[in-house]
Amino acid sequence: MELVGRQARECPGPASSSWRSDDDDDDLAIMASSQSLTTPCLRGRAHTPCCRFVRRALLVAAAALVVVVAAHGDGATATTTAAAAGGAGAGAATADDRQPKFPAIFMFGDSIVDPGNNNNRFTEAKANFPPYGQDFPGGVATGRFSNGLVPGDLLASKLGIKELLPPFLSSDLELKDLLTGVVFACGGSGYDPLTSKLATTLSSDDQLELFQDYKQKLTTLVGEKEMTRVISQGVFFTVMGSNDIVNNYFTLPIRRHEYDLPSYVDFLVSSAINFTKTLNDMGAKNIGFLGVPPLGCCPSQITLGGSPSRQCEPSRNQASQLYNSRVSKEIERLNAERSASGSKIVYFDIYYNLLDLIQNPASYGFKDVSEGCCGSTVLNAAIFIAYHSACPNAIDYIFWDGFHPTEKAYNIVVDKLIQLLGT
Image (cartoon, rainbow, N blue to C red; front, side, top):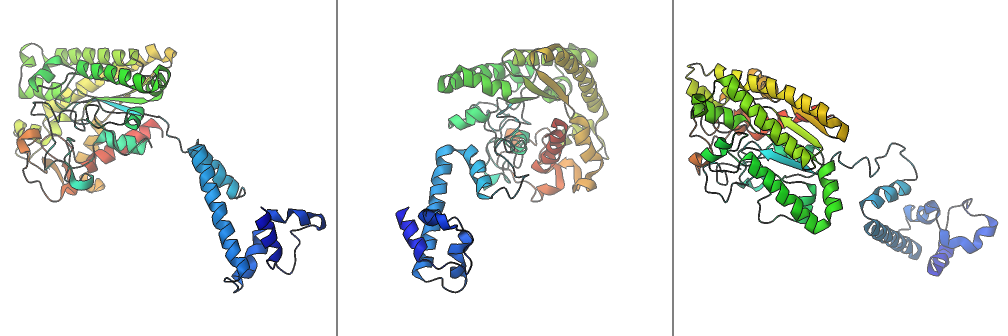
């Protein structure tokens, strides 16, 4: 500080030095009046010794500020910045304002949200090869069943948690991945145990076992208290049921020999509610339960329905509506039962959100609603289109393959979900 004081005395100040009182001579090291130091430099004397000193002093001060911020972490950043601004903006964002509503996000479900958990399994329900991922960052086929991002990624990003939501079975997970959430979903899965057997994939119960493994792994790394905080404050989504209805009841009518449609829907609803109860019992407090989309509007189901004009197949849409109607009431009932313990279990409709895109494509910039960019049959998906070519203009399509929407369609539906979440 002696050097600062000495140099300050040598630097010419403005004509008026009202910034210094008569008894402040011993405090010249304060030199807090940036005007008194910088004004002569701004008047054409930028190369004087004084001005060179000013520049050095400012650089030292800036470096010191960086050190302070680094020492105190993200929270200090907002505080230091606000102080430097001199209170110029009363509405400036604080560190708390920028914190996400949920510290972590978790996904259970099927291929709609699977980012690659099936990559190393012997199953047809995988997508870690082109043309999948052609619009993913770097054009990489990661195992996501779309041309780019899938709902888990989009939700994690829009909720301010992270940009990509990784599969729990990935071999290169880091601690930060575990702390902010992972995906347990597997392509081909469902609430009906038979569904996963047919696809040789993990069942919904298997996914809960993965979640238990996750909890144990996180406890080992950060302790039980922190693990409990991550789980209790995180948000969970379940996205299943479509494979049960499409594959088990319609495409491969195994369950149709045992149940009529209302009875099978009741079986699925019961299985879905038991799954949700177990998830809640395992510590998940904030659970979003997603219904099924209009399954009769998937290109593969339109093809199976045989509509010459490529209209949505009605019986599959009716099954979707019946399931959604019954499961939404049970979710509402479960939420009422569990709310006293601090749990919030909410049903989210995606049926009408996606149907709106299909019925009003031009409003969302789509040109093709009934065909998949990669084809429109049950064999135009997953391993059956490995290394096939896709259409070059995926942005015009709602569906990427015979079953799964494009990233653009997902993005619109997720935006609607975010609005319902109230964030």
